[in-house]
Image 1 (cartoon, rainbow, N blue to C red):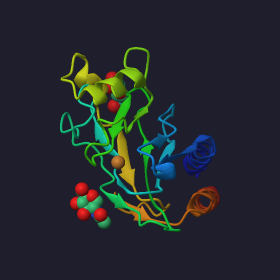
Image 2 (cartoon, helix red, strand yellow; image 1 turned 30 degrees about the vertical axis):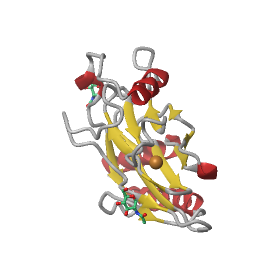
Image 3 (cartoon, rainbow, N blue to C red; image 1 turned 60 degrees about the vertical axis):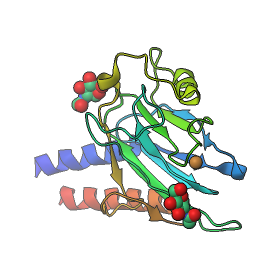
Length: 198
Ligand SMILES: *[C@@H]1O[C@H](CO)[C@@H](O)[C@H](O)[C@H]1NC(C)=O
Ligand SMILES: *[C@@H]1O[C@H](CO)[C@@H](O)[C@H](O)[C@H]1NC(C)=O
Ligand SMILES: [Cu+2]
């Protein structure tokens, strides 16, 4: 009983502190992620909203910006998210940060968007900066950095855009879903707290 109460409090606290970042993909038809990087902590959700064309959010390493990460683990990948011209519903894909110490690197796999600078970073640092990553992408250059494996540990997991915890992948949802999901999450936490407190 005491354990469950503590658990409920911890769950509520984690929930209250977790932030959600919304990243706009292809805003105004551009080859862009907006913002280009975020600083996130464990539990934060990074939600990508695909606004145009046919882009992806694909995890790479710092050293090889335009290639999907395969080691030390398979990178996560939204897959292609086509958006018809004039669409009013936009696909959304998100995942949760589970290690804020590891910078995470992403690009669009629709050639040649990555080489044109369509890259994104989570928690870049002084040693591995977003600008260096982007320059590397543009150059299509072979890696010069040595710390590949340390920066490339798989520290994000994919989840659907709902609180039901369905398997990884892309869950098309409309533009208003962010608010709905947050509200649902809070309600779920409140419900869990209640159950645990009993
Ligand atoms: C999106 O791009 C991929 C890769 O180029 C392609 O295979 C797919 O057919 C495209 N989807 C649409 C709907 O254009
Ligand atoms: C988090 O990432 C850092 C940097 O890559 C790594 O040293 C550390 O072991 C990771 N922690 C966990 C719990 O995976
Ligand atoms: Cu793209």
